[in-house]
Image (tube, rainbow, N blue to C red; front, side):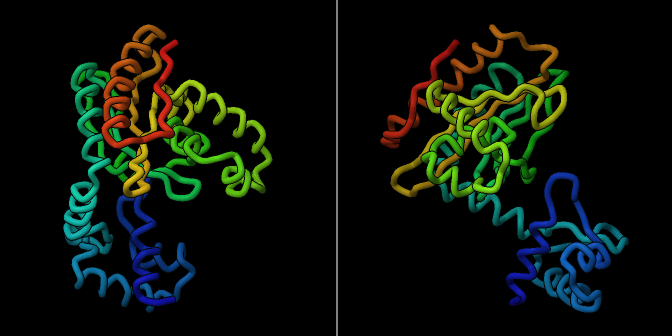
Length: 246
């Protein structure tokens, strides 16, 4: 593997449950000789991709990665438009919202908007979730055809159940998760696609299961759907299904 591929593998270690790593951890997780791992992390530090945590031997993403993440979000008109919608819904209802992208069978948060309520869910930037097991993931998977889903999940024993769930998402125009990705947390999500760039993102609001009833959920869903529908029309997203509020 090239040094760029190895550096990419190190960066992929960060995410849900992993904020920093040591040389030993990188060596073990990537099945790499410790001396090679040490040289790789030093090169990444020198390039600004990593930095040490205080005076420890632990490494975390460097400030350069923050700059790149910001540049990525700013370069995408779709992420910007979707963020405006989610930010407004988050401000109105006080619950956390975020924007996610799908890569293969996983989804990752790329922008989040903290809620203002005392009881609220933390943000999800950088957190990876299984696409089939989250509202954000299913909203994005539903934008694919069944043939693509069958190919992607051909060895999954729950493929038939997933196909059925995605059919419901396509029919309703949104995905819903009840304490699935995180205990005690529910989510509603709507996916948008920009035909000009072939980008697709999921707009999601997460909230504590114990404090929001069905009427409250549907009120938030209506607000999220209104903004998403407006963006879909502006972009010419012909595959967008206007969410049907229960």
